[in-house]
Length: 112
Image (cartoon, rainbow, N blue to C red; front, side, top):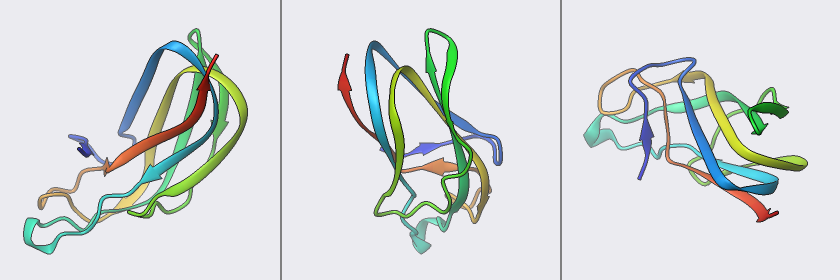
């Protein structure tokens, strides 16, 4: 399942966990192009914010361009209960609409 925003730049997806995780890496997946549906989006850059108990505990200022095959974003081992991915630059469309989106966000982490 993909995440599609109603907006463009500045759109974000917020992931939360009831049990804290020690996160070590995120893998962000761009949406695969599909000409028939009018989808050719390419997220060129995004930021990641890591939170624990409402406080920011880590940040990735630039992920670079996201691949549909997955873009690995390493982070120092960090205790988190939430992560926010903010799209800061993209081009293209999803279903003929100029909105932001991601195919998937994967976390490489362990329960703490």
